[in-house]
View 1: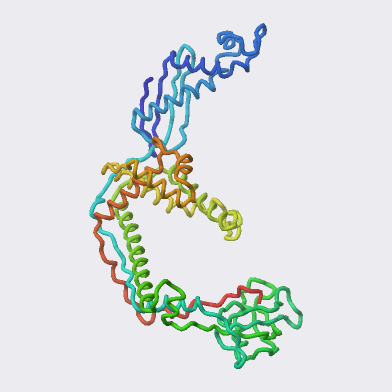
View 2: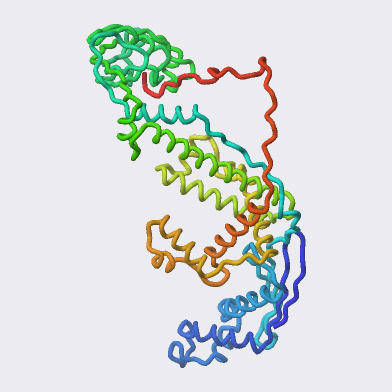
Length: 457
């Protein structure tokens, strides 16, 4: 076999491959053996006619389709290995010459993985943010745990207050006519939750258990029911019961109830340590991302369009699977968002290109630094993956292509080791100071937080 490689634009190459008549004849004979039972020749039982007679009767071309598969695939694989290229697209075959006496000459056009010109990747500077843990954050978490362990107790001796939970019956009407979805019975409504339309919950405050009264409200102009949007409505309401949140005392007994610690001081210290661990993990994760971004920015690589579009399709499928896991079909989501599949994919172009660019740069660094995965590391990775999927390592290993060039488990190990090396040698720098905000432009903490009606009321 002889092969010649010619480079084209857009990372395409053309392989011209010449197979001798002897090699192609062998493929013809294998094709004939595979299809012999399909040929009917007068005077011969089905499948018993010799190859020479079959090709004379039907023409030699009757064997070409399978013969091409049998001859082209191994020759193409050998040419790829010979020229050291990595195809990233489906090959396009063009037969130039074919025949028993001529042999087979063909070209394969394919897009190949681009070359990466690495810049500085050892000792790059990258921002490592800080997330300090202070007393206020610990107290906030303690308060959250206190509220989580609160209980509702009946209220009999006072009117409804903000924060109470009122059990109510209600029926709404517009111009005296009840509307669909405006009626409810024994509904628990927490005052201040902003579950109902603006003005409804506030008008419950001050009323007592057992009272019946009317509430006047106006539906927002952008209410999701166009028939009610902007309309004045009256709700007839009856308060069935009132309950308040009783918070447990923050003492040693509370610590014993919600944790393995005997004192509140010990429990608070454990909350601090947990927050410090989470803060460190968050800072390290962001530092790692910033290191990878810096290393990628220092490299030069021209990503082929075909790789970008393949990644866009892959990201689209990932999103589809995620939506399906949540109980939705991608088509439903796109319809709700007023988008098409093509429009959604178009938004993925830039992140897909960046993902491919990063992967190519990290692969090039791994190759330059001779980063490899040992058998022990691969086995450990499979154990970790098996635990995540709730499977045994043996069952998972049986399903994985863990040999040869398809060893994506080894690739995952090499990727992680490469990133760890880059992070270890990187230089962390503090984030730049945030620009000072003037009083005129500083946003009000209470702005842009309108209550939204999630109920029919």
